[in-house]
View 1: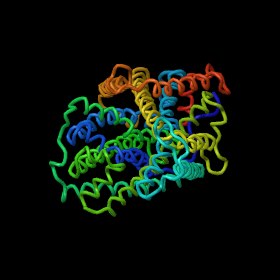
View 2: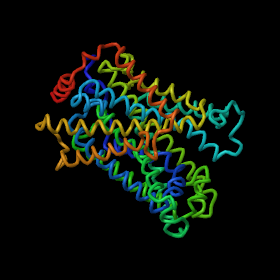
View 3: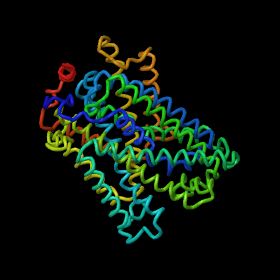
View 4: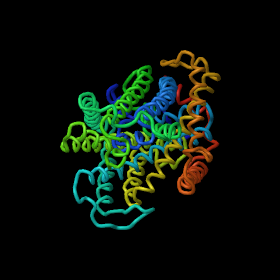
Length: 471
């Protein structure tokens, strides 16, 4: 194995508040501001709330499992460490490579979401049509704005995790206040008849929303990725994961209910920013609606920030284990960040706006599949370690752990199945499956041709790393 991947070389500077806002801010980013109308239009107000309740049960269950594993193995890389210890090199690589696909897809999504938000705020923003991809025009202003945003976010993370965490705290507060304002408007000015509780689509509409929830909740798993930089107790690490998931679920359900009290689902879905349209209607003020758009920009930046952190640490952990090129295990001598991995993710996001919005929808769907697949492997790792290493110290130990593990296995397997051929919400052929296939091929090439031989990486390496960290 390459270098010790316990995370000792990374600086432990993140407080409890830093850790919480990294995860919570990642989960309540931009998606709810642009997707609320679609959720309500597909499932109705009550249907969309029920869909998120179902999704939150799955994610909370997985979050509890992550909490125990993170408290027992608080190393940089999260999923990589758990699955390496439980499943060996091949299982660990599949799990971590899948979550990296999810993280990178979110970063790419944000690089295009930023100019889309500015287009709502700035009249005549779409200037100089360059080309059209899959029916979607690509404008020079979008490419320039998205590219500049990518450079700024990359440099922020390049210079250290502490400045990135402080930036996250400020923006998360802005998003939270926007959500609270929306709920207050609905309480005093809302109309319960604005949209039906359920749509004619029934269960089909509900599950159309359910399948989107993993992408909306992804972000709590940034906590175990950054565990090597967390200056908190191991038990607190587990609790913070669960708290962030529960708070995000409450937030989503509240803003869905509030939006449903403002306008019909069909009206909301026709708006470029449904949450802003809802706020405008509730307060009868275009100015307040534009404030929501500004909160949307804050949401873009919080998700962008968190997933650069999560993705770069996952790449760093794999490179430390000789499963990715060793260059990606480079730590900046001054800032202590995985600079090469951050630069790679930043470079990808700079290019993203060149390909238009439709291709990014495909990438997001493929990334969502990667996320739930990684969660499935983490749950399996949890069950294997509960059986194989019952005496492993678990500061945040779940009562009835096996029952929670089995529930997590059933739920994550169900969600994986929702993306497979034959399911109503299966990945689209050919584009989304081609993205998954290409990512798999790239992973196989990296796994077999990186600087170290994969046979050099064993489950004993993970145990040795854990013991050295404890000592």
